[in-house]
Length: 432
Image (cartoon, rainbow, N blue to C red; front, side, top):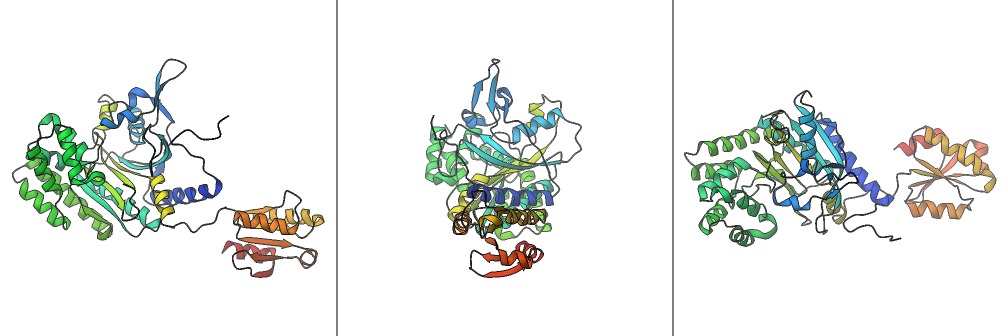
């Protein structure tokens, strides 16, 4: 039997799970403050449900044949399953606001921040075509990042419809527009020179590519970026509408108090997937260099496409990369919780007091305190070693003197300080 996990998958030991659950619970709490409810979908979908939705990334779909001869695929992301759910349940009240935290699978080349099995975390609004919905999603991203204590991050925002008008203005042929988007989407990874190579390989005319690179290099305040785009695309009513969408989105974010230092307009953001139709965004941290921690946008045609026209609902949302967030926080030393969720270990001074220690541990549990006690008939010194190895912050020592007085000795394992307390006093102390 092989003890290793398949490439691109991992075991998570308790210390790692404590960190993962902290991140997941923090993210969920932000979603729920904004009125989103949880949704789950199966780990597998019919392969045809996923095909044709991810552009050139479709090659990463983990597809196989089941015992009944059906083509099945592991879930690639949360957006397409959501669209399927809405298409199958068009009667759901709108806007439909849901979040989803589940594993997804992509047969990708494993590397830092990228795995074949990973957790995805999505939050979406279905049924609203207002850019206030897009602004709300960005506000959620900012609140999530701040709740996790990130201080240096940026949500980079653009508009897929504006990008479409931009590449047409630059002279990209109709049949090369998606190819141009896929090249531009790599800007953050490979830089302008790399994008030039991509343009050439994908058949984007050199002159058109240079015009695109000049436009997407535009920097400045949102007002300055939009004025520059408006000037270049003067007379293009579709471009004007997309620019006004971004203006309105900025206004809504200001109304919600989204701090300006955490977002900017960046016309190089186009997102590589084919189903985006409006505002799009990506979130990056200054350090470490790990790629986008969150990305998403508006997908107004996806549900209609999935349902064959039976359910035509607009949508917007984002994916928050749990795996990359955890990797970034680990590298930056941002986790300050312990290795365990146990708050106190109840230690008996000698074997004949083990039952009393068990009773006290149970009283602490009933009071809502996470507690362990000895199950190995260990000496007191070994019980302390065990508590220390797990990083349990407190040990409650039960001895004859303590029992006679109706107390226990509570030791803070971080400082070594000890206090004699009643169980009720210990509960109050441990709750703090």
